Image 1: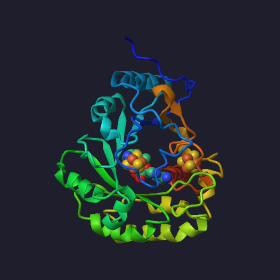
Image 2: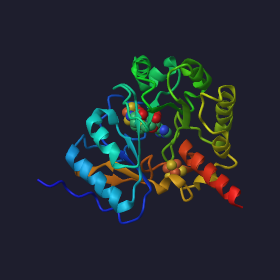
Image 3: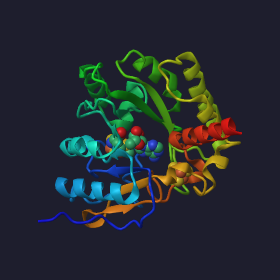
Length: 296
Ligand SMILES: C[S@@+](CC[C@H](N)C(=O)[O-])C[C@H]1O[C@@H](n2cnc3c(N)ncnc32)[C@H](O)[C@@H]1O
Ligand code: SF4
Ligand code: SF4
């Protein structure tokens, strides 16, 4: 049987893409955008390994994809597939919840999610998750050449735990600690989202303060954080993502019939760009702006 061809997303070039290799996840984090009602997320592993490998290769060649981010759901649930698919791209990285162990992928980036110190992480990610992830991090060979970053997604709720998180993980055998902020859905009013960007500014200052306190451990770039402030954020994102650099990335969600579907952006559909907290958006803009300034 020949593997089916991927969905037609036109012939536009996408230098980078992300793929949700599965919608299955062993956790149910309260802030997770993947499982929001407006996103393709129902099919559970309906694309078999051979088909996915074929389709990723076909999409790579069609769109010129050089960099692929493997995500889910929990990508490590399909570890064999991910290990086979990573070499298809010049640069591959994985974002994982860390509960299935930390994969050894020399030369590549593995981002491990934790959402605060243990007492704050576990009510969000699940009882016992912090210790399980800690064990996985300490069990890996820290000299295997894999770049491992711990990432905390800051919401209005866990923001008071920023410094305690860094204190708790600063001596772990990882490359560094990263922060990103919550991306709410349109019209969302919840305990996780800041209603007004101005309320988030003081939290950004806390991240800048921990960066200044632990400059070697916290990898977050202060220039990018400054761009997230309420007086500048919309100049980066636009009110509806018009100027967002992350929209140059092809998001491949697992949709109807086990086929890939493209969403509005990596964070899915129905996102509130005017309150976007995706660090990658602002870091990309910071580097582009710095590049332009250098050329001038
Ligand atoms: C959706 S998860 C998928 C990979 C894996 N299951 C994990 O948790 O790392 C990827 C990352 O997105 C973050 N995330 C989830 N919901 C978010 C939201 N609404 N806004 C910003 N980041 C979010 C998670 O905390 C995690 O770091
Ligand atoms: S582990 Fe990742 S995919 Fe699963 S619910 Fe949490 S954030 Fe979402
Ligand atoms: S939600 Fe954020 S990442 Fe997505 S398009 Fe809007 S600004 Fe960009």
